[in-house]
Image 1: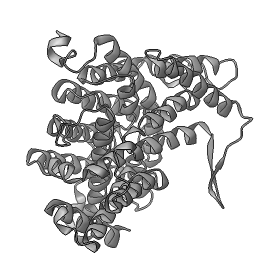
Image 2: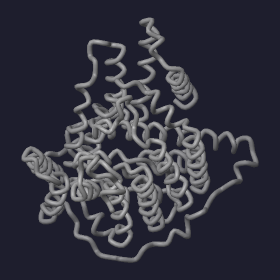
Image 3: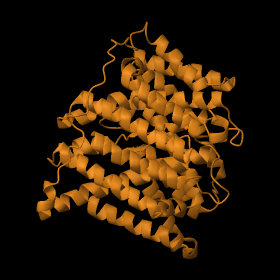
Image 4: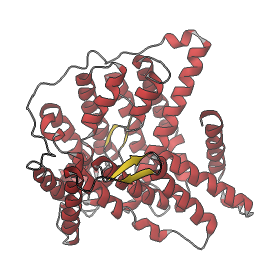
Length: 434
C-alpha cells in the first residue's frame, strides 16, 4: 500500500529509509514544542494550551503535505514569525494576542486564495536558477549557524556581534562530540547516521548533566482558552485597519519567502526539481502551508510554515510523503509523550543541523562564477541568510542585486516581468517597513 501510494521505488527509496528520515526530521524540529509556548506565553497566552496547539497544527500541516502533496517536508509554527507575533505585535505595538491571532488567520485565508490562483507558484518559478542554487547553500549556512548558536558553540558579543562560546562548558563539548560521532557515521555511510548521532549524544548528555531526565505527565492541555479567540474590533477605526494591514503584510512577506526558500533549497538538495527547475506538486505543498497557518490560528498559535529542518530528513534519504507522514505521527505522539521528546537537548540536535549544513552546500558547484550578473546575486542570497538570520531577507538581497546588475549591464531581456514586480515590491518593503 505504501509503495503504491508514495511510489517509493520510482523515487529510489524504501519504507525503512523514509521512516528514519521522518524521525530525523522530527527530532531536529521537536524543539518547537518547547520554544513556541515559551515565546507566545509572553503575551499572556496559556503555555500548556500553546503546546497542544503547536503539536496539533504541526501534525495537521505535515499530514496535508504527506498525504496530498506527497513531499518529504514538515511544517510547524515558524521561528521568527512567533517572535514577531509576541514581541513585535503584542509587546512592541501593544496589540492583544487576539489581534495577532486574527492577523495570522487572515494571512492563512489570503495564502489559500493566492495558492488557488497560482500567485505563489508564479513567484517560485520567477526566481532565477542561480539564486535557487544559492538558496540551498544559504539555508545550509543558516541552519548550521542555528545549530552552533543553540548549542553555545557560537554566542552573542556586543562588539563583534558573534564570538566563540565557552569551549569548556559541558553543552559545547557535548555538541562537538556529537558532531565528531555523527560525522564519523556519515563518513562510514551508516544508514540513519544523523538519527543515531542524536540519540547517542542525548544519552551521553545524561551523566554530564546536559540531558535532563523527564518527569512524565501524560495529560494533554486543553486549547479552549486560546482557540477561536479572534478580535475584530480593529475594523471600526482607520488606525486599526492600517495597523492590521501593516501586521498582515509583514506576516505575509516573511512567511511567503521563508516557505519559498525552504521548498526551493531542500528540493534542490534532494535533486527533486524538474528539468525546467520546478518543484513537483508545489501548488499542493503551498496549500499545505496555507491550511496549516489557518488551522493553527483557529487553534491558537502563530504562523505555520514549512520547516528548514526538513533538510535533515532529506539528507537521510527521505524523498516522499512517507517521510512527512512519519514526522506527523510523531507530533501526534508528542502530545502524550512530550517529556520524552523534549528531553533532547540543543547540544544533541546541533550536530544534525551543522552536518546537514555541510550537505546543503553541494549546489554551489552549479553556480556560474564567471558571470558576475549571476554569481554576485547568488552570493548575496546565500550570505545574507545567516547574517540576517532570515531566509526571506537572503532572497530579497539576491533578487534585487540580480535585477540591478542585469539592468546595469544591458541584459534586461533576461529579467522576467514577475521578477521586475518582485523587485519593486522588495524596494517598497524597505521604504515602508525598513
